[in-house]
Image 1: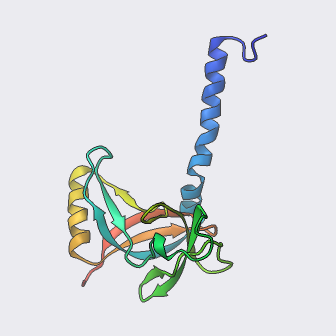
Image 2: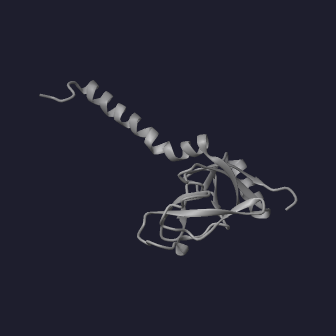
Image 3: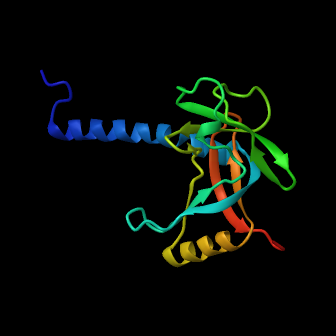
Length: 164
């Protein structure tokens, strides 16, 4: 006996399973956008536009630690970056393998050379991406990031500070 019956039923079942997985895939950034608090992080350009990924500005966060600063369990896939206020922006302390009990923090994944916290790329139309990359390179830019209580982050905006 065929579990799902006819071919249209199997296609419908497969489609429903995929649709059910979409909220799981976007839960972290969506939670950050809806329930998160806003923080300003200083940014710098990291990489030029990649024609295969589209028009975006790849961002680096000079105030955040890199993979080499993780303290604790170096085999942990997820690391946490506690944030501290430094003037009008927030900076990161050393990354740790245990979730902080208080204060704002970023939940990140470590790769071979940097931490990925879900706020690494800012997608824009082609002409705007080129202009933004130049503005970020020339001035003191900040990223407006929303972070929820579990450290999930969403990049809301990137702008150049006046008077830099």
